[in-house]
Length: 220
Ligand SMILES: [Zn+2]
Image (cartoon, rainbow, N blue to C red):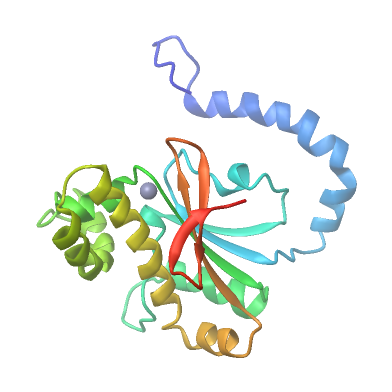
């Protein structure tokens, strides 16, 4: 998808080439599976991931349609439980996953080289207008407290600081998940688990947050 030659097909036309392949290799041989899915979905896990084009959860976890319920946004963030005016898209998806689909786990997956986390670290969008960086600045202000700690310990430049920010962002989202009463009660009664993960683009390795140590370790 990197060819920008003026004669190359428009982006959607390229996608439709992929759709044709999908109809042949992904849909036709799996009609039974699709027929079952036609009756409803029962994913056991919700994944919250970044919108970054390089970190597609379905690809990383090699799952089939119906397996994971996914929300993607800038920096894979979960806002705290808020009833303020506005349109709470992540909260709506979370509510549906937890209360209607009754998923067993919610996984927050951060990633390496995250632009949203970097912008939090550098504060490069601070003071910009909505539509010119302001929406992003407001969104990633969810990380402001964590950013202070990271900046104090690692500075605001370089991969060490960026990685610390990326891992801290996962922890912020996990903490914010616990501010939702429906999540808190299900975690308390054992019917829901919250998990943290981190996919490093540079080496393709997935790390999982170990509850007992509080550290991210490579998935085995
Ligand atoms: Zn990202």
